Length: 88
Image (cartoon, rainbow, N blue to C red; front, side):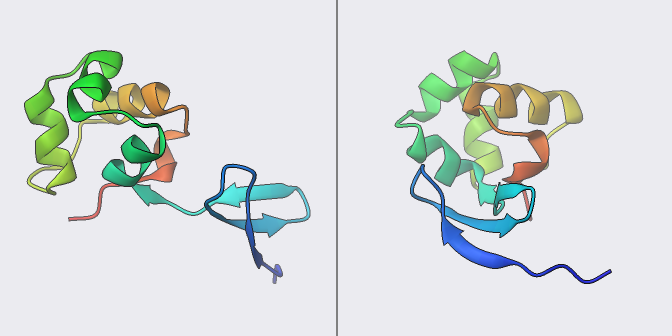
């Protein structure tokens, strides 16, 4: 099945793909999402209930997150877990 995608700018001001069903944000790194929310590493760690060192290591791609950590970060950043790019 072929689907046409069109790159647009969402209300939040970051790039999205637009499908017939609605806009879907492109994956973003943890740091990009944290900065979009105007959060420090310490603030994000507190909101997600994880350590500051974990946030630092994940942003520096020193390790991959556990599924539970991914879910906590996504909830704190108000995104779906699959929208956070943790590529090493």
